[in-house]
Structures are given as structure tokens and as C-alpha cells.
Length: 183
Image (cartoon, rainbow, N blue to C red; front, top):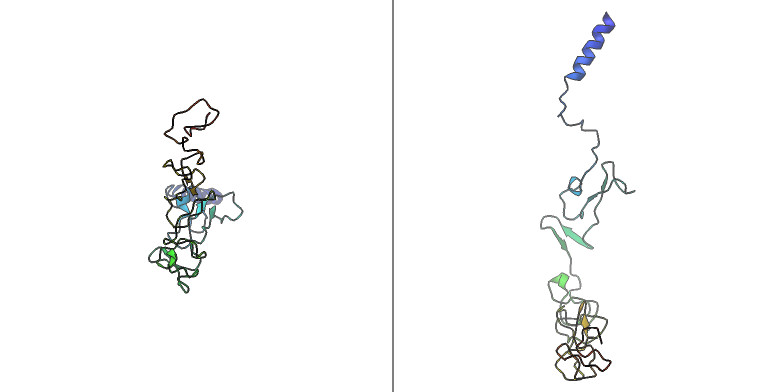
């Protein structure tokens, strides 16, 4: 009888637990989405949920990558730079990180004061991604397609022939006269 009473009491206690109650605080809950891993801090980067990653913690969260090279200001949610050398390339324009406009402070040939040069490499000499140089060897009013700045390039597919441009009519001559990619 004593065994029956003890079993009944234990069963009753187990049945009285609230099924909606949160798990004990020492139990690790596995993340279901990246937001489950977000620590709310800017400087620690974006955490993600990936329980299969070797770097995941017990919850399945992978730590974010630190966003800032030098210092991070958590209060303002920005990277902070001490700007010990505001114009490292000595071109007269301070680096963007130091409040200036120089997009590549390691190269004195690159700054907002530089002239954009026509180059197929897409180098941005003047720190303006919308410009790509002004070479128009055939003087037809269209910039050579070899002049690029990132993805933006000129639109004259044959800058040696003035009768070739996007506005030229296609002529049966074996050349792409209207720069549409077909002959």
C-alpha cells in the first residue's frame, strides 16, 4: 500500500506541471532562426543560427564577425577610427574613415581631386563611381567601351570608327555598327 501511495503522489505531482511553463534555465534551447541568436550588440556583428556549424555554441548559434578593424562605438553603433594619419597618401584629401572624401587613402593618384582615367580595369581614380573617363578617339560623341569604373563602362564598342555607336544603323559590312553585340 505504501508503494501505491508513493507512486500516486509522484504521478499527481508530474501531472500538475504546467505544459506551457518555460524549460528550466539550465536547459539549452536550440535556435530556429538567426534572430534567436542576436545579442543586440552592433560591435559583435551579425550572429546566425546554424546548429551544424563546427563553431556553433550549445544553442546552435554562430558568433558574428567583428565589424570594426580599430575600435567600435557600441553607443553610436559605428566603427571608430583614431585617425592617427588622416591623409596617409599625402594627396591633400583626408580618408573617408577620418571624415574626408578620399576613397583610397593608400594611393595618391586616387582622390576626388583626381581626373578619372579611361581604363578597362575599372579603377576609380576620382572617387565617383558614376564616371569612367572621357576617351572618344573617333570623336563621335560616345565614350570608348573600354573606359570603365566598376561595372559602368562607355558605350562605343569600336572607338576607332566614327560610324559605330549605339545610335548608328546596322549596315551589312561584317561589323557591329550599332553596338548591339550582333553583326
